[in-house]
Image 1 (cartoon, rainbow, N blue to C red):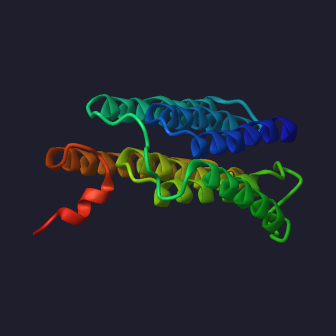
Image 2 (image 1 turned 135 degrees about the horizontal axis):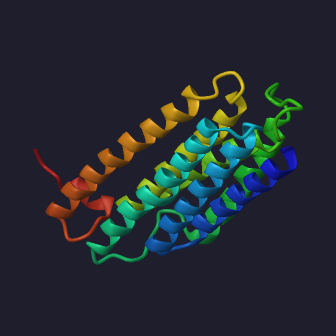
Length: 213
């Protein structure tokens, strides 16, 4: 079980780098969806048992994080003329370097925390920290609102990974709470993007400085 979960978490880390290195909005959204599918698989494996509740929760994770939310964002991209993140605050190559540094620091820092056990994969804590930092990096260094939503989704995915540590203590409330929080957050960001699109011809958050009461 630990080996399988470890492989899934390695996939989550690889997707982090794919999101940091792409300029295409469609690709970034699809990578976020792929990460959602991997998290559904991780949730299923981490429980260590197969029953209807675990299967239903894993499928709900895949449906929401891997299918529904990316579909909403892809539809938003189709409604605007912007297809790429042209001038990020931090370039794509430096972003990859920062992502690699964040992943390395997460691996080192996780060793000093008393959060590992023989029942869980040792990559849960570093994968969680690295994914949260990746999401924060995308959220703060990209100018397009849709890309920032992808960053927020990635950050939430990192919180979700950390919740895998508590599947035995609180097997239902942790994951379900994260899913609800994520669903509400995406709808709020969708409303924000809709208002930006009504005011401006693009979804770049730089134009928010032009708003007046």
